[in-house]
Length: 178
Ligand SMILES: CC(C)(COP(=O)(O)OP(=O)(O)OC[C@H]1O[C@@H](n2cnc3c(N)ncnc32)[C@H](O)[C@@H]1OP(=O)(O)O)[C@@H](O)C(=O)NCCC(=O)NCCS
Image 1: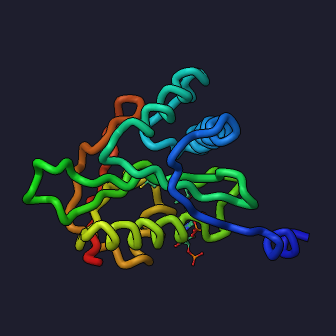
Image 2: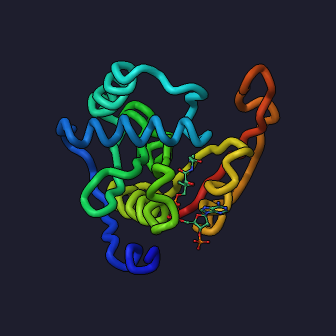
């Protein structure tokens, strides 16, 4: 039964310091699934595997980025990039940003996205951040509901935040003090 399956599901969150071949394959597969479901953090169509591999490998090289992954029974099922400003930016040194947060469609509803947000808040506090920011397309209704339920405050919107098939999509901007 679904309920039994849910009860047996173990979720965990960690920072990915190095990508193993298994983790890379999971990340690529889950990205493809998320793009097909309409929420592939910017991608509208599924790119070739090589492009996805390069994307995830390059994530590890950005020193101001922390790649947080959510796991379902040990397998990567979602991720989030927690980004800090570079050291030269003293004015924004206490701010972190959440980018490209997603959970694969097959792993949704288990609390994985919430767990990654809690972890991002923890990591931000550990790094002396006092404020977290993010932006979301208006069409990402689950994410909007999720971040608002986590106390993120909408402070602005951009009517031409993104374009899908030539049509403008509104975007919302959020912050939360921590
Ligand atoms: C948004 C997303 C990350 C949620 O992942 P998830 O693992 O299913 O979320 P969780 O189980 O941790 O949290 C569920 C919460 O999210 C919100 N939520 C999830 N699915 C929802 C839906 N279909 N409609 C409305 N709210 C929804 C609710 O607040 C819910 O809380 P509740 O269970 O107490 O009602 C996932 O749907 C996703 O990857 N979407 C596409 C990518 C995206 O929009 N990313 C955000 C860019 S910043």
